[in-house]
Length: 390
Image (cartoon, rainbow, N blue to C red; front, side, top):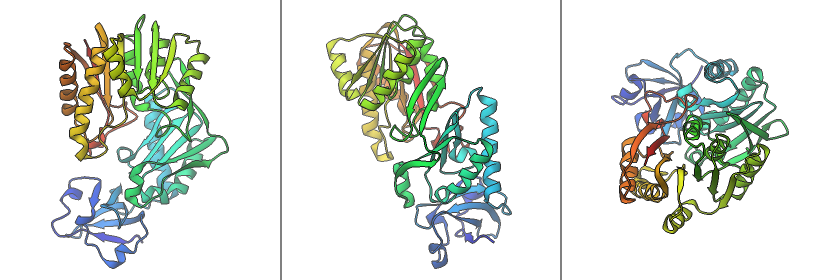
């Protein structure tokens, strides 16, 4: 029998309306509840006695409970995890013809705090909550039964783990070799799952990389904040005349160079440096490109960072727009979920205006279909991508 967590009188409105989170100030906290191990599975009960399903509970976190199953009779055991991951797998197999995608996207796939990216027979797993940390052995067993991966890499180095009282760590959970590749279009990218950014690859920009590449035949292209060169190498494969990859990470650029060499993309050059500073310098020098891509890391880590982040996005748009040849294109993105789509459009439009350029917004969108959005968590629609014709 799972422990029961009761909500305070009048504080169960969000749970009643389907929200998958419960905060600590909504819980009738007791000594017994505070003594529960973080990540315990519990039943949630409203002040009216109505049962609200099965949740992961952390008495030491501001976000005290995260929904697992609305069925109060459910048991989050090995069979439950296998069934839930199987649902996510079935969806991806309908969406994609190759096994390279985000397999599990947290709350939207009914597995709050869990992210799993797939690279063929290698998986990268990120458990961002105490509940998913405790359930990792069950998750691994499910993955072995469903996929039989050669390796599973833990990328438990997200700062959000600190909010759950968890340490940051990376390492192999299964297998002996973390070597992995991701296939996208005609390209096969080498990756570093143990030391690269996040879970090794940004599946969320798949459609945007293809969208930009389709505009790049014969073009001079700049891919800023390029990581391992996803946008730029796709542009080169689509016939770009020259591609410059810009990033501060020497290991990421080394991987990008190896991928370029493996595919005979001799028109690709790499430049190491702080991207924003280099863009300002090149803008001042009058450098010009036909297509510019700017896909920076999050400028707003918290809501309080928004004013500075919006100024930074406007500055980025100004530098980039100023380097685009007339008739060219700018693709600019934000992965700061604290910045709304409207705020991001306003900031980039202001930057384009300050560059004394006229822009037409051709596309505004988010992540690919393997990054679904929970309808009760609009803030989980973190990615914003804008394609401008200048």
